[in-house]
Image (tube, rainbow, N blue to C red; front, side, top):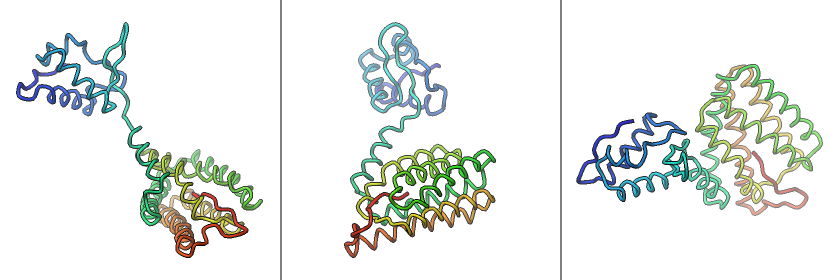
Length: 253
């Protein structure tokens, strides 16, 4: 890796920008160690203080890690997602996103995920989904008292669908959403045997469409699923019946 002499009128920012660009272009990959401090000083023609400050900024951005000791140095990190994940998870947990906005977002994301899964699923993916669907059926038939078990299977199925897309953005977003939306459903959704079976049937419809390679149908079923349960919660919010007597307020997928 060879850097050019930093521009004198903005040495600090130019050092940061050049190293960032090398990482973004994959000239420097995760696990690579940057040249030594002495070598970087010579490449950039800058002072030790300016160089160290630039490296600290890159470390704060999550692009590199400064390792001490023998064999240490500035090491390129894998793609940073922690801050984004934590921020979105916190917004969901604190219910800073309205039910309407959450529903609109999920309809778009989960509809697209289901459609892509229908186009890209391999036989092994279908086998995995059908095995999970069988587990979900067993819990659904036993009633809403087994909702927690059903819900865990439901989350796994949504994550499998995201993984089938082979798109890291959909995989990450799906994981964040489904690990944190229970705060909304604990407050706004009352589950009973009928709604639990509705949820199970929605999963059946999605999996069957994915198995058949019917992208449009898979998208429609996924969007309908999100929309229907969001309407249940919105109605409960409006009339104050989110925690009806005789029903358990719980999370849904």
